[in-house]
Image 1: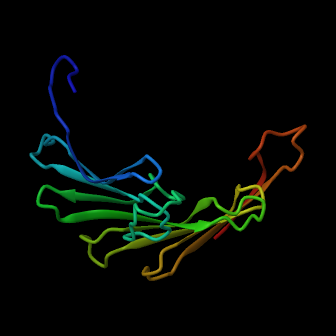
Image 2: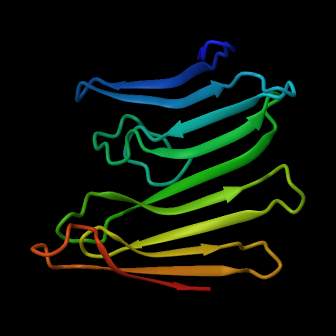
Length: 178
């Protein structure tokens, strides 16, 4: 990157590339690492992205030989670490098969967990998602399982079914409960 004053370089590394010969399909890379430039204080942030390459719904399971590519290319983990690879923040995603019988082979985001392993008490934040029959996010539940209060927030979205009057996925109401 060059803005006319300062030049900085982000280095990228790719690992775990997969090509499925049976379907002539490049499934992408399992891991992409970005080594960001040093900041003004001499610190460096490393970002590691991990992707599914086959039909997996859970993190850390990866079988690029699956003929179905239900989750191929979908992100399942983002890890931020310092230059010594000490984890600072980890975001993990899980997927589930759509419950909609008209579209049974769709992987939808089921949950997100954010943790801060380097901080005292290792705070965590969980989000779970539920979907309506049209694939819209109908419920989002945020929680902090290891906090002193166990705080939870529930967001419920109601969507219009009238395609003549409203665009698809246009929420008619959003209700928030703490």
